[in-house]
Image (cartoon, rainbow, N blue to C red; front, side, top):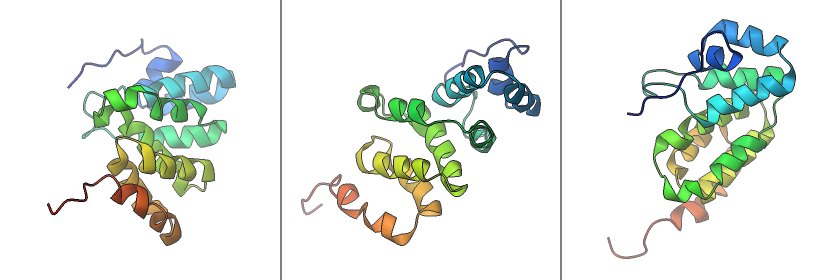
Length: 156
């Protein structure tokens, strides 16, 4: 495990990193650009000590909805060359889970980003798990060829 750097609790970033409800209240009253910058920082630099115990994806997804946040930063993070070099799930897992929740709330841009990452990203299995819960049959069938291409075509 890594030890995340947490901002002071009196700052907007610190409140959002801790996943408390008052972080949402502060974000909604802060300038939108500042709130989105803090939110993106949290999603792209997972602040949780143990991602298997602490769940923040729904908290962050709802804040994206409330702020009508764009997904450009998440897209850049997922398709950064670092994705190939660092295949650790902790680098992309929170972002993919947030996209999954956003897709559940009807954000088609999140659904399309998940599909694209499932077809081309390193942590494709996580993206596929998110899609299995939220995508329709046609969307999942369209991923068959890129997913199957990841596996060797030998007898094994």
